[in-house]
Length: 148
Image (cartoon, rainbow, N blue to C red; front, side, top):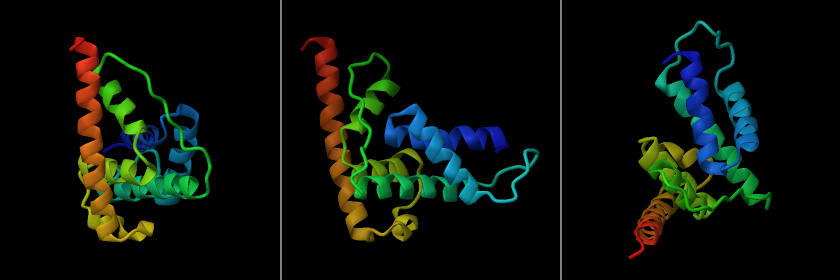
């Protein structure tokens, strides 16, 4: 992928986790800086570099949540499926949010996240919890929209 696409993808991960444009921009900047030292604007970015940046975003997000820094939540009823997904994602606890983003949205193996300080068992537990919660929330939202 090119550098612009890399920047956009890292920002998108940060936004999906925080729900806040400014916070996402700050987190993406720090993650890109950590994961891509020496990267030139003309360079192609490897999938592994993106994974390292996404991992850094997740680490930063969980670090802030662990330190009782406000975990951003935005919950509004929206019309598009992407916005409904984002709203549902914002209702999850930070660990569940990261687990579902990492595995189901980004498609990375949970095993690759063990460096973030949680065990594989904890992460799979959070992933399963997040999937159930997302399914319930999205079903409820869909019922609300259709008036059923």
